[in-house]
Image (cartoon, rainbow, N blue to C red; front, side, top):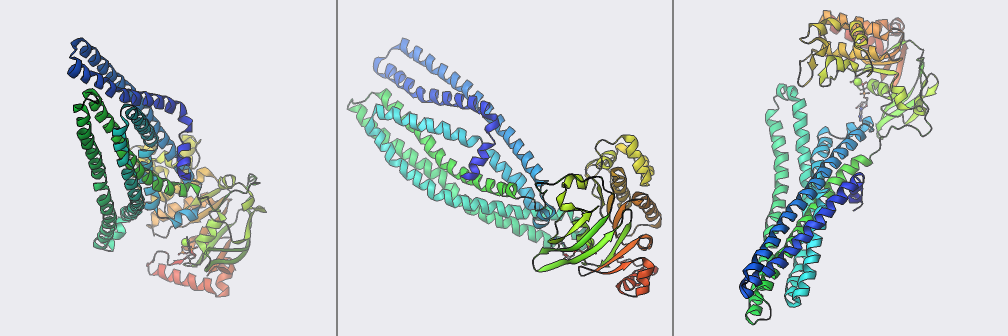
Length: 586
Ligand SMILES: Nc1ncnc2c1ncn2[C@@H]1O[C@H](COP(=O)(O)OP(=O)(O)OP(=O)(O)O)[C@@H](O)[C@H]1O
Ligand SMILES: [Mg+2]
């Protein structure tokens, strides 16, 4: 119920529209309740009084009521439904912007499909209940209470009969509502699993094909959807007979009423019009009883969905600004790691007390076997994670004490694989700096050796890339990433060199572009190219979470340690032109 309160709090900004919607809803229900009274008159006028003039008059009144009902319903439908769409749109925005507050660990722990399912399926479920639920509840309560009051007034004995059957219905709804809730959650969870598989397969299609996993993947997906089908079937088994049983109880009641009421008419205790009105009220009352039962199950579904969404909304990013965080002053570029320890999981220490200092403008190459902790180290420097103990100082300032945004504005990241967003090449470079002019963008592209291939594209800088546009090669994408970083012009640079080998020409262009980019900046490079480490001011050799050697290329070669071993391995491979794509990051 707490979740429902939170959900309905979203409606507060639209309370005016909802107020008018509710007002017209009440009017509609009122008209609805009045109609049988006129029909009673009509029947009695025809059957008892046989008065033609009155018949015309009453029929006219009833027609007027139907018109009113139509107008009022249109107004409240419109107001409620527009509000519903509005609120859900707001909700989607809230969840999306919340995703951006989450830390790196959130996205590592959760699968994309699961997050997507919550953003889509669960939000859709909520869309179905957020205004519909209160509207239905209000409308049906008015009908139920109003109807009962009127018929008690008309004939309490007949009313009593209806009310005996009502609790049966309520009990029925309660028992099955619980079951349905459990099953709905189960179905949603299982659907989420299949969405995840779908997502993995779409993005990983080349891998699936290459490993000839189609059959297994199809089996995996089939199993997931079959699983959800089984739960859905269980749910259908319950919900299928739920409605009809409710209907049966309602019709039986009507029959009993007709039988008993008929006797009353024959003995002359009530008029035929009264009996007709009574039956009409009985159906008006039966409506709410049935829909309250349905309402109950929908509340359960809505609760399940909102629980899952609020769970995300309540998850705070692990990495947050301290309350007294100050903006990061312009960075000169001195970086110190002090006794830095880090682990993702308690049982596996990844960085075991790192100590080193990097002077402004130095280029540091990170080298070491796979799993040594190189990526982890740069992620900590970027403050995607916070250290378990120890600290990282930039210009003597602990990066945990400054506002993340102000720090991130001064740090550049060129990842191994460049992700381009759907849009033009220009927009993709502008990603780095919203207010950049076209001239600045072109200059950055030139410095990144990307200008000429961009101008060769069909629409130049306006060429659409990504899903709906042209495909760029890995080397071209990298140069766009470099252009982005050049445009951002950060003081600190993190570079994860691509392991995929490019042709010599491409390689040379990228190398040049990188040299221009790194000039005068403090840069950390996870180095895979021999040329990079030759140029490095300092090489940190990591092994199993520790820095085992530090120095320049020559110093480290002379030590004849791990570095020399890795270097020879790599050099040998290159001589044989057999680059195993980064088994060893050198
Ligand atoms: N998100 C994570 N959750 C748990 N453990 C992780 C996570 N990321 C990395 N690790 C573990 O931390 C250790 C260091 O990983 P890291 O990615 O930093 O190595 P690396 O030096 O970059 O290796 P590579 O050269 O293969 O990229 C590994 O043992 C890895 O299994
Ligand atoms: Mg790595």
